[in-house]
Image 1 (cartoon, protein in one colour):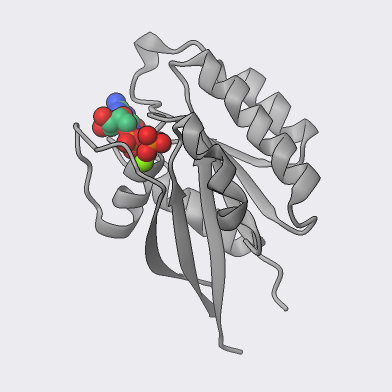
Image 2 (cartoon, protein in one colour; image 1 turned 90 degrees about the vertical axis):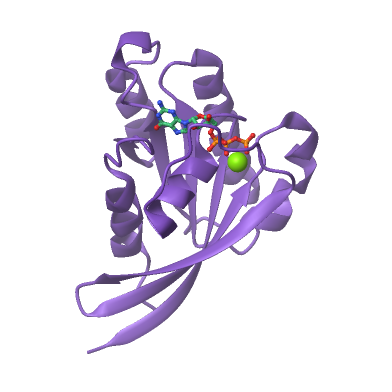
Length: 170
Ligand code: GTP
Ligand code: MG
């Protein structure tokens, strides 16, 4: 049977990790070397088909700069899914991602589908966060984990499709 659903999705993570770039890649198939830092948040929508259903993602791309942190609850409240993004070349951004996970676990919805994206996986020579430590952390916390590259498009559509598959069907 056919079902069409809307799902609010929020991206959270440190500034410069590539949240806007992941959304731009997913929604428009584009990448900008000089993507501007987000102010407040930006809204996008994109529909994906999984099995016999379509999911229209209503995407809130939040600003990672610390001064916008207090706005985040407006964007994750009522969300069905969250993508927490870090940069595999920046260990501080991985630490920040863990703080976002804690905040969502404390204040968010228990049915929230959470994905952890280790972005910039094209920069292997600058890596400081191993896939193994991130995967172990994700497993302990019930998150779906994948490394992505907004630049080369690795795993970008896949992360959104995987989320769509994991959304509750009712
Ligand atoms: P804020 O809006 O400030 O929170 O940042 P953001 O998380 O939205 O990061 P943004 O998408 O603006 O990307 C920051 C910089 O990283 C830009 O110069 C992008 O071109 C670059 N970038 C994003 N994703 C990738 C990637 O997968 N690989 C590489 N090499 N660079 C990337
Ligand atoms: Mg941004």
